[in-house]
Length: 630
Image 1 (cartoon, rainbow, N blue to C red):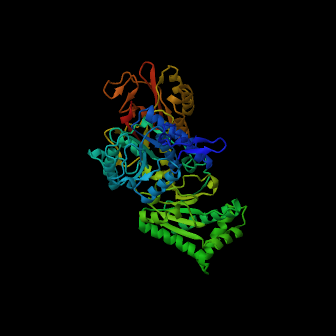
Image 2: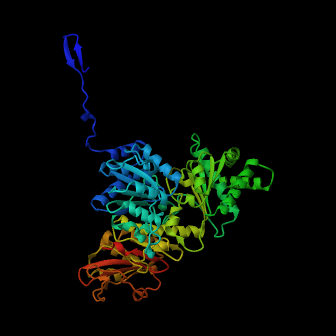
Image 3: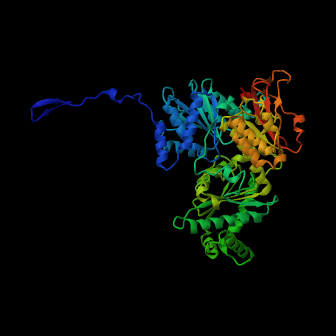
């Protein structure tokens, strides 16, 4: 063994020998992150947004020494692939224990876990239950563990990983269940306490969410908003700028109902509009590539209401299927024909209507009332297998669900009292990759609810613009119909509900600013002030917001500069930095312009330093977390 004869020379030659050192793991440069990017680009996915988010997160961890921060992005903007790439980068950098937390949903955990496993990530991601066996030793190896935000599951995981340090927790839908709803009682909710224990003294927390206000105002795990990372949207994404534009006409079909829009006829009309749009797409836009489209009916969180919605949809579809002589079939068919003729004049209304009636048996109504419904029917809802798929649901489709090929949404879910901003932002299930058929998408909604929903996103957009641009501290907005988050989640030891002011970067005060603030119409003053101060001291997003929401010069007040050097000294004021926790702007200044809702002030300390302050006077309430003020 190990030798053989050379027949030409008659010599004995030495063969290969076994050397274990050749097979031991070597400290070669890891490239998992690059491999994940290549996988995505190979599938035709633009990774620019993912790279920005991952690089920002690594900077926050390394340069910012971030123990706890947030990655925020729009609903349904592809956060799962970003988290796969972030995990790959963390593994490349030597982090050995990464825990992914998800909503308390078995099916959602299975879906995300499956996507992580199919990505080729090493080590393969595992459910926490796979490592609970006492024979499995976790120390000294790399692990990617998935766990639901469920008290029992988290407790079992904690018991298993006792003694492991430097854990990185990546919390998907971080504003759900993780914040401490007992923050003002000196207690912790069970999930919050268990995640806190999971992070430990040396771990890191990365919350991922589309609605980070609750995390900020709750001071969840002491996250630092100065380190927050924006996950920008990809090129094919359609979100708040599309469905709730600040100006211009919408690029989709928006059907506004009267406020008393609970008449079943409106749901039927929305159904028929969906059928017409789906038929037109299949007959005229991609006739050689038939596609299944879905419609979401979201009217309530109550099961009884879902049963009513099901009856409305079922009865209308049955009338079209049976084609029984009678008023219902004739009136429904006439409505479909007339809608097609009006909406698509280039189409043959007879052909479209006949196609709908011929194919209408290929429909499915999917009701999602519960976790069990979701487990049984989620695939049919997220990837419609029937030509016409109608999805009826409440809370279970309000968060973390991507509905592919969604073509219509009938949304009438309103509340008698205040709308909770973060909850309604998550309910925007029409967001996502709708670019290929956006002009055919139809949102049917009562007008007053649309306006409330629109303001939710206007307030959300303005609040996040500051941190996207790296300017100022977060201020969350609300009014008499909209509240930023649940009151129970607001840490009132650090949050100021009444200050009502936004301020921006310090600049050098110059006497000529007094002339700029006093001469000419107010809109011209604002423009000149913006040009003189620059985007750090006067952010572009604020100017855009004022321009798009003001009703003219009388609605905007640009006040003459105010010297704060004579203000009373105290622990809450920093004259050098032109800061005061309880704010500078009072009733006496506001009353000078009683018709104005937008107010701009230049405040200076009598020396070099000055800041621009903005105050909205009306029904809007500003909510600011002072804990992260420097």
